[in-house]
Length: 314
Length: 308
Image (cartoon, one colour):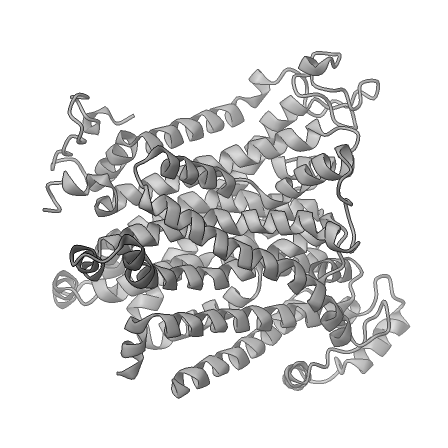
């Protein structure tokens, strides 16, 4: 991926110093790739995304075909018939193929919602930190209220009033999640705006928008990216959990979560249709948690073992 | 300390008003409030009488004031389904829900402290590392899937535990296990991280270099430094666990607040929805304030800051 920043000499125990000329983004990516944990995360996520994109090519059966003569067929390695790698569900659909295709919707929901949340959270966090007194006070009190109301309660109530809809769910999730971002960045926005280079920009006549975008945002982007990466997994979890109550993805569409919801009723007959989609969700969440952790290390090298070796810190 | 307490109490009032406002706005946004508050497929006459009964024919400002003041006296009206006061139904379910949340909360704290201390004392040894790998993996396991797996293994296959219901102690084993693991995974990683940071702090290094026993260094110097963020997270964990109840209780047929809320949403039992969300919000706020106060008492750095 980014071979320039990986250690050229693997005999040396410390990571190679990152060349100063590379941009900050490349430097971070290089650090992520240089750490074993980060490399595993990147490889896992690449594999998951590839599988989701080319699901139909890998799938052994049509994921929506209901074969009523082959319902609750155990996995083929357990003696099931019809070559179903992970068995069939109570409607005779191939679990393996459905997991591959269901992964696509789960990842899409996670990516889109996480990105929307990050944009809203970054914007409101910047405003709350820049206009400390009124806007900031108001937004942070809003955050206090939102914090006290579990999202699931809001999602459930809204879905019941407005009818279950994934798009609505994603919108509400995006508007609910901003508090995490705002709480995380608001104090560093407040600190950054008092630094000399920001004052300099302001006195030369830069507009508030320009100051916020060009001068303050780069300084708070780290935590936002870290939060984004862990929230992809969390959001996929939330969608799955609401699917269990019938409020997530509606048929004929299906995600890993709605597969779990379908399987929940027939746990006794076909455990494989509940167990394997759950394995899929777990893998996705672990991959994004790993990425979040390695991004955190990459942004704060002082916390990791890099500390002694990073020339910029000493 | 007094100003601190007053400000915290004001926060409860503030959250209560905020949540009432939120519910008020949500209901008004989703169309005809009277049709929404009336039971599903009600006739026009019933909707009209609902409108009159809830004062929905009055100006919005009056409606808003009435709603907020009624919420503060815990008067949410009668449940449509059971013709009981909604607040009474919520209070009856609160006990069972606390009973499945609080023991796992204590277990996660104690477990996280043990795991965190053990792993932070051996950060580079195999035992410490593998413990962290295990907690990391469990952090990715969806709690509702874990519950389904436990039901599958212990209730369906082995038949050791009842799968569902409020059938005494044995029915609590699965929810307690699920929530404990849910809390343990994050909390033990946090504890270890905080302890490792604390070991690099000046006063802990001083304590060690002046020859105190490792146990004294840990208990009297490192742990008090590491504990506040862990306790603060416990408050967040409490609200996370209560969110999880909304999914777990229907899944395990346990009759708590979560199942009540989910059930009353599908029945469109509006007074009960309002009462449950309101009580949940106040409960979570109180719990967080409690944790915040404990953190303040434990952490001397915050105490001096408050004196300024």
